[in-house]
Amino acid sequence: MGWQAFLISLEVTSVATVLVVIVGTAAGLLLARVHFPGIQVVEAILMLPLVLPPTVVGYYLLRFLGNGGPVQRIFGINIVFTWGAAVFASAVVALPLMVQAARSAIRSVDPLLENAARTLGSSEPGVFFRVTLPLARRVLIAGAILSAARALGEFGATLMVAANIPGRTQTLPLFIYDAVNKQQYGVVNLVVGLLTGLGLVAFIIIGRLDPGYRR
View 1 (cartoon, rainbow, N blue to C red):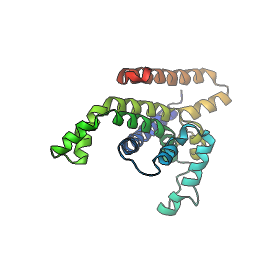
View 2 (tube, rainbow, N blue to C red):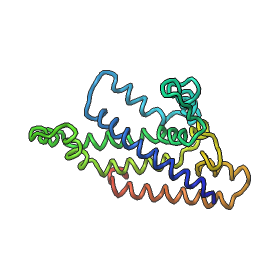
View 3 (spheres, one colour):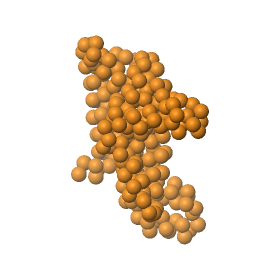
View 4 (spheres, rainbow, N blue to C red):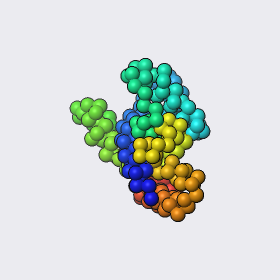
């Protein structure tokens, strides 16, 4: 059934989700609690992967990660067509979903509760981990699951920056693409059924964690 592709997808999705949760929660906190000139521009940039064609996102990533790009100039490495590029692509396309969830979750927390913790001597990290995070955790978990599902299904940008190398960068969506071209419809049906089932489970869990998502 393409077990190598399954394992690569699992690894890529796991690492990408960790990155997305950390960066997305921090960005959501910034957008929800800090007001500064240009905040709408920052928010628009973070949301862009939701509306841009995958080929456009992939092109930007190629310029960013590839020869002559910022990553190569600063760190001296080129991760295009590697496992790391697949992780980066999956994280970029999933990030807006986590940012939206984190911003919504943190905005729903009553600032009076956070201020009360501050008056009792809590530091800003203490306020976040003791007050904000526990109150927002259900929506944050829902956002993390939705982001993981999006990362698992990423195809276009991954194909452009990581290629489709069996055993190295070929994830399940890329495996499906190859199998369809080879007319291996039996295995395609199995993998498509697996991804569809995982998607349904993800949405059921999200609905239980965040009842407002269904409205």
